[in-house]
Image 1 (cartoon, rainbow, N blue to C red):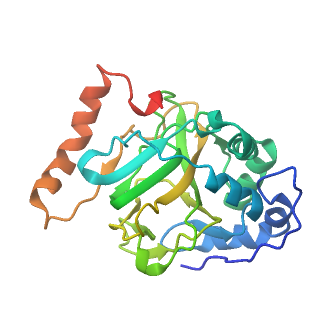
Image 2 (cartoon, one colour):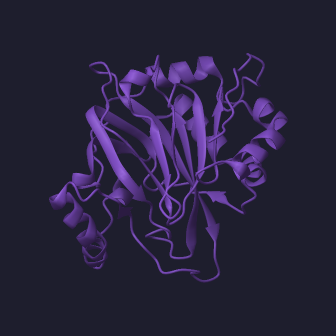
Length: 272
């Protein structure tokens, strides 16, 4: 994989959290990198936000208490979708991420007709605590509550201060059909865009972060409106190695089990 790593110079508009001048000035370079990346379309941009503001936001992130609904396929992973309700810089970042200006930039870089989900369903602040991992998976394709919203892109802002490779937690990417793989480092103020498709597997191995130092990111998802569904709706599909027979069996039972559950119970994700 080829991705762009650029050092932010302190020259962005202090009215914004996102360094719009920087990302817009380099949008052609970013577009080329995204469209030609392996194992599938993706991009990593360093210096995405104003560093002072992002540091202050980071200092005010609370310990998240709502555990993800990924069950055996994840460990110690916690989520807060509605992060903007904490106000201040959290609201400022939220406003930038759902702004027409940012949407236009994402559309140009990815060549996709998208909009950012303003409710951040399944997104928001993600915290991986001690020993956290996330098994390889392909995300749901149509929004569980908006049947014509096709999940097109994952947008991930990493907030791992003083991150080192030995801590682990790199974002693993794999094309399930071609077998091509890579890993993306996850340092502070790195923004990653990746396609979300049935073959775009991603996850991370168990982490070894210092005590009380969490693998932290803010996730947003970009959707494309379809007049009708272009493919069968699916939930998250887990790809587990056969070397773990119990979890492998559970991964095969997961999709029908979730479909059955969805008929009778409200989505847990929608509640936080």
